[in-house]
Image (cartoon, rainbow, N blue to C red; front, side, top):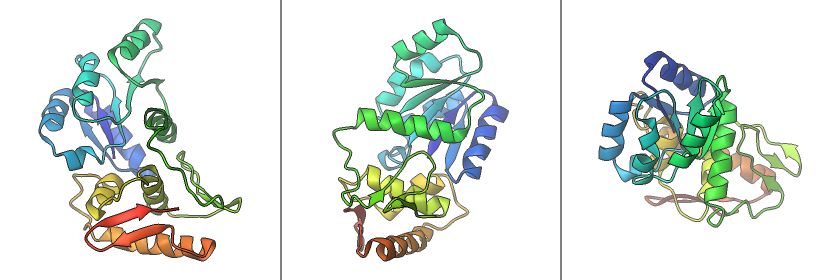
Length: 223
């Protein structure tokens, strides 16, 4: 899930719509709403955040310290106007990346994943099966050099499992990441359907299971 913070509701909602079109969940907040939410939400909900996107807000220079007290997810500033002074100020404050608008959400996703890999390089375990390549920029994975076409949510689930391959993740964590923590229109059990289809496709291509499923414990990518 991507969290967008911007005082301009129309701007924030346009990003939410763009993320939705690409198959990613997101949630928008004004500055005051964001502060209240991050200080009161659960660790499980925060664990579903893949990046914080900070747009127009008078207090945004204070957000990195606020976010880092609760989450290690990448923080990306969205700038309307190119300004060296503002860019340097944002980096000094603890922003991980600064992007000038307009920018496609797939670029935002790729930048967030690049930051994530740098920060957590010691924790990342890439696929152990050399036949499988998983990308984090919107491309389908490849098996033996050939693209394996996956629906967007199945692809996103695979990427999430690979990112977190050193730990087991629950159905709730996957649902929150893929559908968002405020989504009441979809039942959490939908994850089981996505996972069943994904595991079958990978098993057919690779000849074995690379996702371990344990009842009541969750799922883990085992390569």
